[in-house]
Image (cartoon, rainbow, N blue to C red):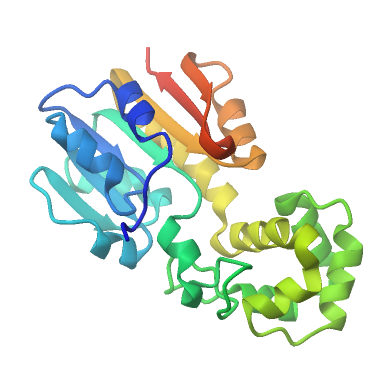
Length: 255
């Protein structure tokens, strides 16, 4: 199985408007799906990923520099490898197919595994840490803010009363079919500090663009999309489209 089959692959790369010999940054390299297409169009790519398994899954390619890094360090990494300025930056947010389908990673409520959910396993905080140690009030806020769960407080109390929870299926049994997806999303966002990371990378990405350069963002839930929309509300919007499985693609040009 491929590490990950990117959603909106052709559309995202089309909005980058790849120019032969120009430099691009793929902030979420994954298995390299977007990057391969950019390179096939004669682009030169700096690919970042915080997940070492993603870097290993992406083949070694001519005109690709792979770096193990969280995209919150984008400016530092770009300067280090001579990718400032660039003609385009790509962000494909969310979780890869490999991460979801690998039980040991703990991202899926349908596959048994440890309550992990870390993109980068060097981090000390896991989903088990949050589920088993946070008090009801803090869990409730987490579920409300990151999962948009209307019954966040009662769900948090239910989880606390069922402690200790060791596996993904242990948690899924408590949350039930109705709230499992949003609960797991909330925990994943908290474990990886995803929304703060997105707020950090957007201005860095825009600043790295040369005049006429493009930033393309694929988001998968409203929390991400709102951050992108808000940050670029005063920028020149090139195009917006609604895509496969509720994914949203937004592309911006630097004037």
